[in-house]
Image (cartoon, rainbow, N blue to C red):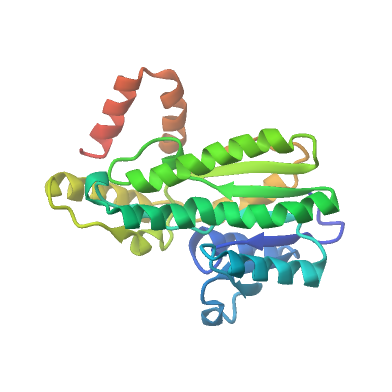
Length: 270
């Protein structure tokens, strides 16, 4: 995108009340960009350092109102960081259809609603950048995070197709695939209480939560977003996180499936 010597970009970051979204929005605002963040309860964050808007990505009317207000105020949206989402922890067999639908409604359909509303504006202005926040769980099916992984796998497929459809249009499409970062994601994860195999679930959960709370600062992702913005020809995928987590994505591509799955199962003690 534009460098610091030109006019600031107008950036919309969904799910900006905490964690990765908050770090991205605060950092880019400090760099002089015009940043709008979204939250279902923006009144709880009056001193965020950027403009916070009310948006529920599960509600098409709410999405339309928030994005419409940005366009009315700024006449453009240069960058969309599609970040809103949450996690479910638990066995697939013990997760109700209602919980599955809610997970997809936020993580997949929520992202779709936002980009579907932003795309016509980017077409009109002749360009833009869409960054969809995926996960290492969107590349590797993680045990006891299967529904979360499924929602991110779906987002990966959507983004990969969108990249092809918009190639050459001036609208660039990128996925960021974070590993474990130290945010409030752990505390906000919805836990499905295990009935069968409780010991395996709890052992796996301890590994997951330890890795998250020992993770790097989400500012690392904010720096990556800035680098992508300044790239004329960004890649489709950017894995970010600890070395072993980025390595696991490479290993999935080159190892036999059974060998790779055994490595993952051993790591997560399941």
